[in-house]
Structures are given as structure tokens and as C-alpha cells.
Length: 106
Image 1 (cartoon, helix red, strand yellow):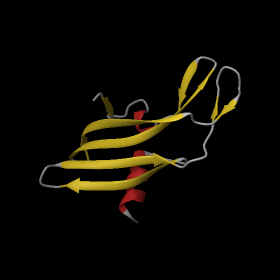
Image 2 (spheres, helix red, strand yellow):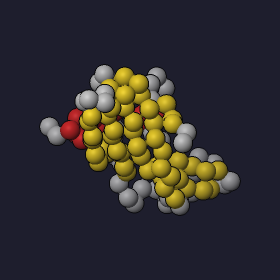
Image 3 (cartoon, one colour):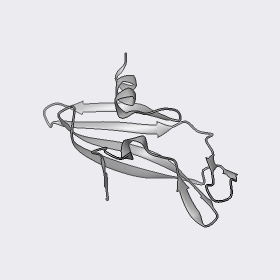
Image 4 (spheres, rainbow, N blue to C red):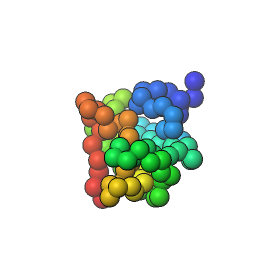
């Protein structure tokens, strides 16, 4: 199994999310994981039920202090869509309850 597949499984990613790159710096005790989503996904508005394509992709970085004993930065482009006055974003599996990933505000 390749590194991206291993990390996708460990992060609990499923379609449309997938790991595109993994960079390990053993001397610096740092791990960088890049996550992307497959294009062509749409959102269902929870208010009106309309199907909306993403209107923009916003870059996000998340930090985990001890993921496989590494300080880990997860980098993702998260799709967003607007409907009914709301900014809808694709659910992020690494942000689920109990996850130790925290957003980094740059």
C-alpha cells in the first residue's frame, strides 16, 4: 500500500477526499499531508435542498501535535458554496469530534 492510501485510511477519508502528497522530515520531527477533493462535487443546501456547485476553494492548514509521533500539518483546499445566505463547506473528516487536528490561523 502506498503512503497516500495509508494516510487516507488513517485520517478516515472517503470520497471525495484523498491524500495527494506526504512529506516526512524525520530530523525536524515534521509531517506534512496534503489533502484534496475530487472535482465535480456539489452541495445540498440544508435549508432549501438546492444542489449547488462549489463557488470557491479556500486553503486551510490544520495542526496535530502528535500524529504518528510527528508534529503534523494537514493542508487542504476546501470547497465552499453559497445558498440561502449561508456559506456551505464540504465536511472535513479530520475535523470530526474527538480529532486532535486544530485549525491554524495564518
